[in-house]
Every structure is written in C-alpha cells, then in structure tokens.
Image 1: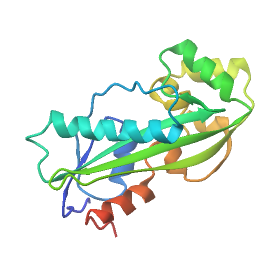
Image 2 (image 1 turned 60 degrees about the horizontal axis):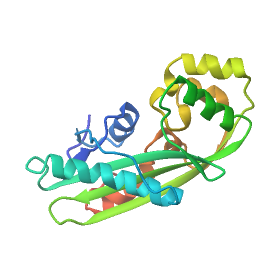
Image 3 (image 1 turned 120 degrees about the horizontal axis):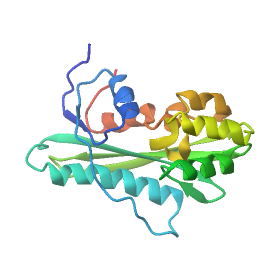
Length: 200
C-alpha cells in the first residue's frame, strides 16, 4: 500500500523500470512522460550530458503540463553508458545494439544515472548523479546476436538490461545496482527529503 506524500510527486518518464523503482519507495506518484530531444554538444563530459538530459526531461513536463503540475515535485532521470570516453545511449537499431555490445564485451564501463527534481511551487531545482562501474563478461558474436534478438536491448542505454536477461552478461559491478537499472533510489530519497518528502 503506497503512502500519501506530503507533496505531489510526478515521474517524468515512461520507463517501466523507473516506475517500478519509484513504487518501491511506497509513495504515491503520477507518471507524465516527457518528450525531449537528446542532442548535446560532443565535447560535453558524461556528467554534463546525463545531468542535462535528466533536467531537460523534468523541465519538459513542467512546461508541457504547466497548468497540471502546480505545487508538485517533478522527477526526471537519464542513464548513459560510458566506455573510454564514448557515450552510449539507446541503440537506434539491431546493428547498433550489436556494435555496442561488441564494444562493451570483455571490458569494464561506467553507467551514469542522473536525477533532477523541480519544485514547481518554488522553482527550486536540484540535479545530482551517481556512477557505477560494470564489468561485462567476454561474449561470442553468437551470444550477442541471440541477446539482441531477444528484444531486450532495444530501449536500454548501452543495449543491455542488468535486471533482465542482460544479467547473464555481467561479471560484477562496483557501486549502486539501481544506478545501472536506471534510478538510484538512495540518491532520490535523499533529494526528496531536501524537498520535505520523508521516505521512512
């Protein structure tokens, strides 16, 4: 049973994984998906990219639903995968998913997830991020093809889902598991408490 928050909470994401993780906090919230472009300057650091995209999603919901989100806290989030300073978002097609996994296999990479919170009643905005190191197993071309054909990589940064079939591709991680899934709930709970929302 979800508890009523002292503030209205809005998740600016259509991601079922983020919705599930938000639900784990046992707070009432609404989902208003954002629709924003994800183009950023090529010379930006991973921190800049992931923080900007999370904020862009929250801001898009704030302005698109301007009369519907008064006195709310809007939560935006974004996840990227970084290998040797290369940033991987969601693959555009089958071939790009295969190419991403071929680059990641047998290597270690970072997953960055940022959380942006906007208080629509005061305008106060906070943006933070967490980073987790992921070690992927060596993968044969046939295993990569089989995984991509499962359909799971289609809407995942880096073309894998650590909480699904993709868990079989991972050797170990160093850091927050939920950062890799797509919403660092410990970070989010700390941020919400700064807005007066007590989790426990």
